[in-house]
Length: 419
Ligand code: EPZ
Figure 1 (cartoon, rainbow, N blue to C red):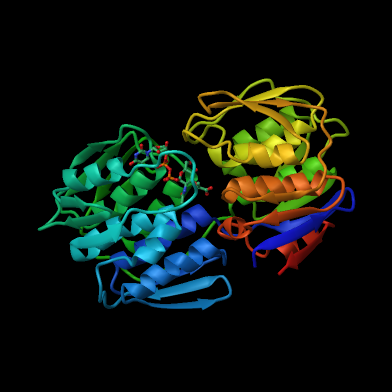
Figure 2 (tube, helix red, strand yellow; figure 1 turned 90 degrees about the vertical axis):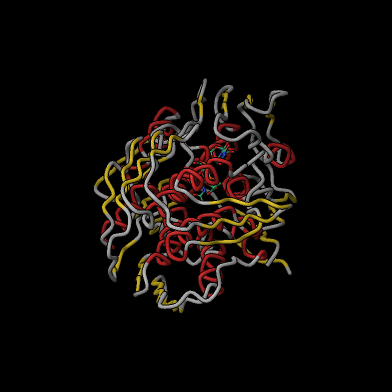
């Protein structure tokens, strides 16, 4: 389904259970390849990117069954070492399967990955890491071929704490002889989650959540049943919906300990936040306060995956705000769509900063989702806007958010598909 019409009916009074984490589920699904037995993952969100990951696993020869949010992968046999191009081009995370394939079979072939357009997204750190583990990496035209005649542990220092490269190298290192140390590793919760799964499988991983991770490879891995945590970015998205529409929202299964920077900014904007265990409740203020300066940064900093969603809310604040994007080179493509709804946002010539002029009441119109989180920002905008908003290219949003129309209805809005 391509287009969704959204209309809001005022303040939100809702309770929601947060879906499982996309960015944890994807590498954990890839990790199932390490093991010739069975891996069971619970709490996996049924979203397009997960369907793509399951498609890759099946294409490589594994048996995958899905019951609700439980995914069972039996990887007795790997029948193919090439990830089909159609899947590679659908999402960035498909590249993580290279590391897992190397660990399992010693070879992997794929085209360059697709995914959200957020500026240049090279994979040089991943490939250099494979080389450091002793692999031969051949690149011709679009094709990446990686081969090893026995990987050995190495010290790999990442030039930037890339989430994907850390995951890929963790997975590959699980198949290397000896210890691999990843320096300047990403500290994101998704790395912690993947490492927990690997440890449950029997791999010795130390230091996950810090910038130095050590992995001891070639462990005898075992069957495992593992539960995914709630999605910190999806949870943040629904909190911002409430900020824009007004009212109160209560989220269950929210990974509160991993949402601190988002909750802190919401507090600065005047939200009343209460947390208890994995429950977070947010009440929107009558007047939203502007944020003079906010900068995205790797975890535990303010997440780049949340900045788009703040733009429509800050447009309604009582003054001007500024957001600086430091992780990706071009992540303000949503601005032109929000401007069609009445926002006034100026993006700097080098595309790193957005100045958001406050005091704007957004109005519904026809808009197009440019990427996943930009699309989420349009849902938030629609929930606070006057009149109907029709969001085109909705598939971008379905890559990361489950049952969106039902959730919007739960929040008190109307949502109807236009065919
Ligand atoms: C992950 O992407 C997430 N995706 C992204 O979420 C998230 O925005 C990003 O991490 C940062 O937190 C998944 O987990 C599936 P990076 P990833 O490698 O791994 C540069 C969402 O909306 N870089 O940490 O691709 C890169 O260009 C998505 O859910 C290199 O230069 O991000 C970027 O500027 C979007 N060479 C920076 O590092 C490399 O080899 C961070 O990228 C790798 C990365």
